[in-house]
Length: 301
Image 1 (cartoon, rainbow, N blue to C red):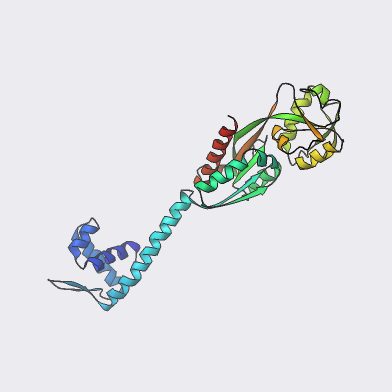
Image 2 (cartoon, one colour):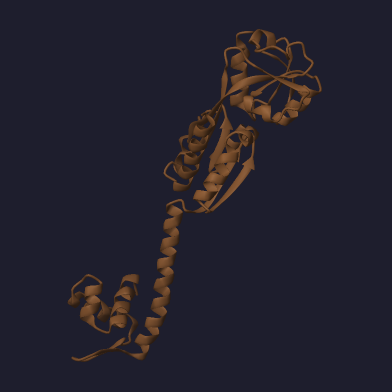
């Protein structure tokens, strides 16, 4: 018994006329009669009482009509639901993000995406860039919002795609009473003389490399502390331990005890969206990245 046969049967059962049912199905009458006859042979029971004047349902036909109506209704509903998943209208999306995304793109992206995809279950997980890339390759994340990372992968099977979604300047965070805190901008040569609060290269390789590149011409900085979160770095800065180079969006976090000074030459840092190459055609991933692009464009104005 096939879905197609049930549709043929149901059309005849509702019309009680093979000719009208055939026109409704956009087919000729002989093939329809043949298909209904084959269905009766397969299940071993007559479904219709046929005469030259009328077509009527047998008791078995009435029972099959009731069951087939429910089954086909559920089948059509299921097919529509699956189409919604394929179109990215329903489903699940797990997104990782670095903490600095909280102060830039996420406040706009989350409500925008949820308004466009209310039936998608969006899960947000705060993670370092390195942790996110690892989870992307393991299949535990659908999209990652990372900082200054490349999407280079050790194997084609774990290949990642990436796209820059936001750019901002790098700034130096200094204790408010530090001799350099009142400067309009700071050079790399001046910064390398100040003890540096940095981050574990294994967890944030892209950002650590970016800062190293900025300081490289002056010989690199003297790292005295490594922390995981920028909030912790700011705590050390406030306590007078040293300086930390961070994205300019950190201005939204700093207390009066910390001064923000731009870097000479206005070097920048980037937030990137990354996702597994196998999800390149995923409608729900595409919808989320589109929201990232739109929100980023408004922030740049």
